[in-house]
Amino acid sequence: MKTIATIFVSLVVSITFINCSSDDPDQSLIINEQNSKDNDQPVTGEMPPHSTPEGTVALKGFPKSVQYYYIGILQRWEQYYFRSDGKLLMVHTGYPGSGSEIITDIYQYNENNQLTGLDGYDEYSFQWENNIIVGASTNNVAWHGRIEFKYEYNTDGQIIQQTFDYLDTTPPSSGKITYTYFDDGNLKTMEHYWRDDLSENYSLSNITQFDGYKGDNNLFFELTIIPGQSAQLQFPSTSDYKQLTSSGYDRHETYQYVYDIVGRVVEKLFGDDKVVYQYYE
Image (cartoon, rainbow, N blue to C red; front, side, top):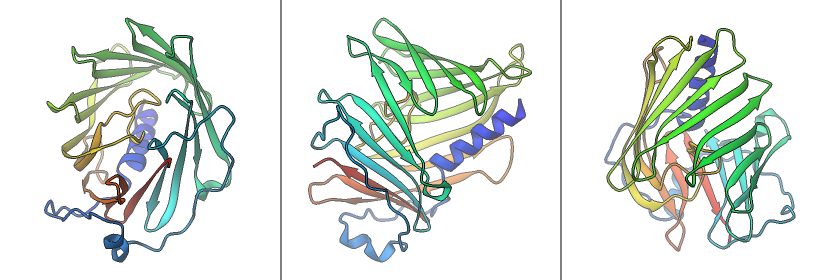
């Protein structure tokens, strides 16, 4: 179904590749906050203050929030809350340009501390086999209704394929994403496929490729395959996005990073975009 494919592609572009950056691979790495001041756009918008939810703990060094700016304007923010055992319990998300509403996602676990559900804008339930999540289901009433997910792993425990079937669309449609990794475990490529009828073959829709990583640990949930789990171990140095079914969406991004005094990434800069990271102290 073309509408679904278009919506999904637009979502990927808006979240992961907000805007094209410089193509120069030799841009120097910014190593402190003061050096970045001259490159900053005037910042507009900020996260609203709110109290720490009951049952959550500020764990030192854990990711606290991430904020996405375009031309200095805050587009989206996320705030993370954890249990005392380090499990992600809640995520608040806001879109300042769309009003003051805060979306709350609550993660649910069983007695074995396995993720069993997600209650929020979408409601997920997760299926486990042999101590890994092999499937999930969700109901997105506003967009597509029920969606079923399946996950396949390699011998290293990395997800190599995700398939998703839209059960309430007419005609039925399906998609899949395949993943490859570098030898160090970092995500290398994502290939998105679609089919508008479950009896037909998939066709390749778009490709995302990461050419390398900076070596800095990435604790944030910018890119996820399973909700609440980061799909990137480190921060990438460059990325390329190629859309095969339409023009005008291709992106190449080269990232610069800003570090705090203890060496943690606190900003990612690319073109007119900036991502700001905060940690619990």
